[in-house]
Picture 1 (cartoon, rainbow, N blue to C red):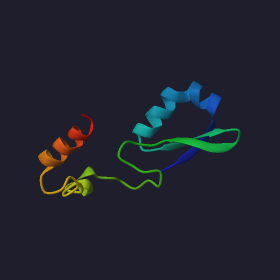
Picture 2: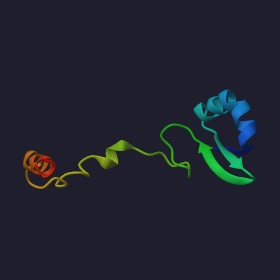
Picture 3: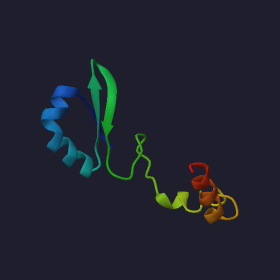
Length: 81
């Protein structure tokens, strides 16, 4: 994966091209006053270039609302009355 750096003004001018590059798998770093400010990356990748899957999040909220999410939501709503 190729990384290129662009100043903010240059990136604004080149945005359509940077988007196409991201679609082809190339990341671009946008700088502001010479410091990294943002990154345009291909969908589904982190800034390190690793593919991310939403499947790893499956079930990650289980138990978050207690045994009964209905009761928890009702209790939270009652707090606002």
